[in-house]
Structures are given as structure tokens and as C-alpha cells.
Length: 158
Ligand code: FES
Ligand code: FES
Image 1: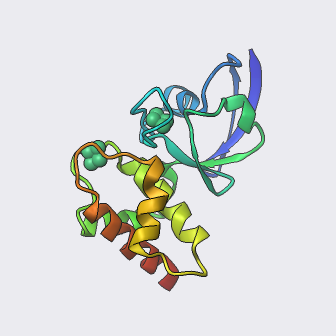
Image 2: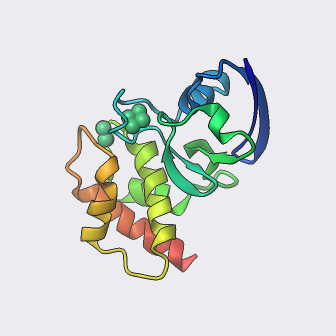
């Protein structure tokens, strides 16, 4: 067993874990933060995307022990005081989902994408390129791309 201490959505979480525990399993099984999904076993789908010290990462590709001492944000941690994050609101407004399985990962990737591109326009081509690591099995991507553009603009506007 190995001790890990990770700040998750602003709260310090300590646990004694099997050293092989994946970050996504720590979040889902130990903390019951089940908004972070598992959609594949090949690190391709992006349903497990969370933020690690502000960067989008696939939580199925990291061991919990690798992020000891770091800060993780999950989809449960981005709304504030009951108000949706602008990117969540944009997905709802632009119908950027159907079943919703991929949506938490899409939203977390989109927020990181918008922050990274703060200085340059987030074009449709750029959004599609940066979405390469997130798969949706049920929508066309058109509304997801629209939602991300609108969410990024809302984030920029503050
Ligand atoms: S569950 Fe992590 S990429 Fe699919
Ligand atoms: S909305 Fe169903 S997988 Fe994307």
C-alpha cells in the first residue's frame, strides 16, 4: 500500500492505496466522484479527462500515486455556488450532447482548450484538432464544436 495525498476540487484527500490504483479509479471508487467516466481501456476516448494542476489529462493513464501532492479538478468541481461553469452552460445551450457519457471529458478538455488559447482565436479547425483525444459515440461533432466556441467566448468575456 502507498499513501497518497491529493487535493481534489479544492479539498485535501488522503488515502492508503494499492500502488497500482489508477487516478480514475481513485476518483470514482474511493471518492465516489462518478462524473469522471471510463469509456475505453485503450486511452483513446477521453471520457476520463480531468484537470491536473490546470492541464487536461486522461485520468485512466495516470496512477493516483503519480499525482501525490498535486491538485485535481473533476467535472463536479467546476460549477460555482450552484451556477454552471460557462462551458457547461454552453453545452446545454447548444445541445452539445445526447447521452452525455462523453460530456464530462469534453467539457474538461474544452475548458483547458479555451484557457490555452486565451491569446489567439479558437477557430473551428483548431477546436476539431484539439478534440482529437475525445470521442463521442452518439452526436455529430457539430454542436459540440459550436458549444466549445460559445463557451470559450463566454469564458473570455468573464
Ligand atoms: S477511459 Fe480514459 S481515455 Fe478512455
Ligand atoms: S453524447 Fe453520447 S457519447 Fe457523446
